[in-house]
Amino acid sequence: QQPVQSPQAVILREGEDAVINCSSSKALYSVHWYRQKHGEAPVFLMILLKGGEQKGHDKISASFNEKKQQSSLYLTASQLSYSGTYFCGTPTTDNNAGNMLTFGGGTRLMVKP
Amino acid sequence: ETGVTQSPTHLIKTRGQQVTLRCSSQSGHNTVSWYQQALGQGPQFIFQYYREEENGRGNFPPRFSGLQFPNYSSELNVNALELDDSALYLCASSLAGGGTEAFFGQGTRLTVV
Image 1: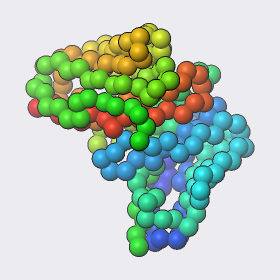
Image 2 (image 1 turned 60 degrees about the vertical axis):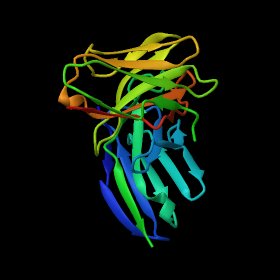
Image 3 (image 1 turned 45 degrees about the horizontal axis):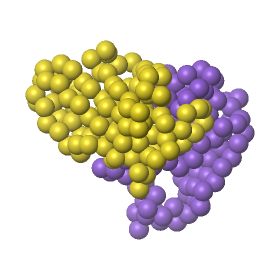
């Protein structure tokens, strides 16, 4: 099943914070986050592999709650370059073998000056 | 830039025709996955190749087929094209195993008329 992302879209002013959520109806072994700008390929942001794991990259971080079968992506002090569509991906296989991913529908983020 | 290259970048085909899309994986990566991305949606997993064999498949009909070559490059073939096959086709290369990041190419935009 496809993970569910929320919100579907968000508009921010530069410097504001945002949270993007990703929920799954099945047990999760990992969550992958990507950002895609219009007309470009999805770009890898981070993978979370363990329940409770949190990772960060610059001012973008993420958490993974295995028990709740969900992950959240946190964008702090957003920059114009953060604009794009964010996708979470979860393994298609139950045992996390390989990295064949089922992606959510995406969250469109627009950062305005 | 990820080092994953796809060709061609754009293609227009007529319904019923056949098409072949190509992907060169990033150096050192032995696994290639193919995704279909319709406008405004997340990528949908088609199949994955590892060591020249299909390693996993999504919910796509048999007219979607693929190949992987000894140098790990890959092809996606679609027979009997339908209008609904119009989409961006993305390939992603990675190392084998769960929990590894996948790097996407820029995609091939296929239009079926």
